[in-house]
Image (cartoon, rainbow, N blue to C red):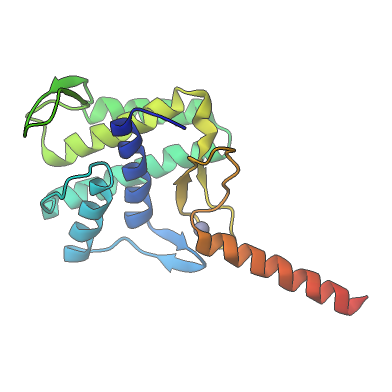
Amino acid sequence: MNFDSHVSGTVHAAVALVNAVTPGLRGGRPAATPTGTALVEAVTAAVQVSTHQPLPPVSPASAERLAGWADRLRAVIEHVEAGAVDEACALLNAVLAESHAVPVLARHDGEPWHLHFHRPDAPEAESWAASLATGLAVVLGNEAVDRLGVCRAEACDRVYVDVSRNGTRRFCSTTCQNRVKAAAFRKRRTGSVRV
Ligand SMILES: [Zn+2]
């Protein structure tokens, strides 16, 4: 899998944001949306995945707004997991429109010209939402759309993007992969005792 490195970064950041702030289950335990400083830290760490530069913390208001966008991005990935790509694309188109995503070539801070996915003067939360949604849009408009998924392990709904060569990833983390392996092992052992 080789997307443009900036696009690839935004896809990973979208996954990181969804996993950091949407409520549900993480590796067998309940996952709640962080609040206050913890939310600011979680959102900042997630969006920083898209860049190799350290970023200043997002504002508390931006963190709240991005947690809202994250719920929508989760729904997009859940539709993909369910094979409902039409619904995923319709929902993501709505997110792109509402976050005013727009391609703009920019050059700043000594970097070469590169493509931004938001207006230079866009508010912080909106500009991140536009970038993360555009990253996901590149994946949804690609035959690699099934590289997005929701963890198949029991009691986990964290999401992932599979960048492995053979595309066989099914779990959000090695922790969940190992949980499933251990459960299968226990099941086999229990079965052999009965025989
Ligand atoms: Zn998992």
